[in-house]
Image 1: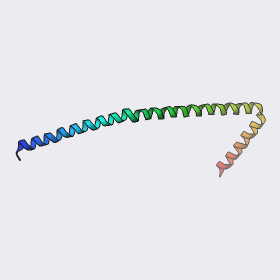
Image 2 (image 1 turned 90 degrees about the vertical axis):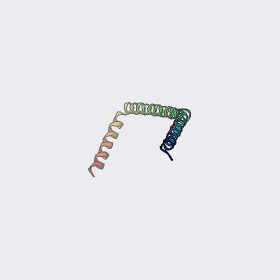
Image 3 (image 1 turned 120 degrees about the horizontal axis):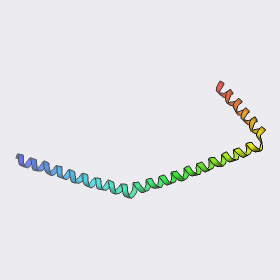
Image 4 (image 1 turned 135 degrees about the horizontal axis):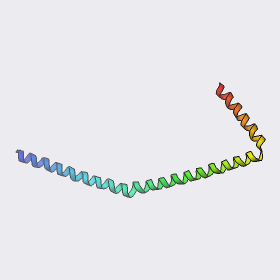
Length: 93
């Protein structure tokens, strides 16, 4: 095989590889646009809804706790003291 033939064969392989890379790049881009991007949007939307629901629930529970403390302040103080005593006992061990 002559140098010219080897050079032409190598150039052909390089051209074929470049074409294959371009085709694969196009396929990946198509998959990203058709499947991955919409799925990420859906996941982000679900996460946003879950975060909003969790925030609403925390606010609701905080409001309930506030109402309970206002209705029964002595009970709240007693429970806080008991919780402090239990926590101190557990941490001491």
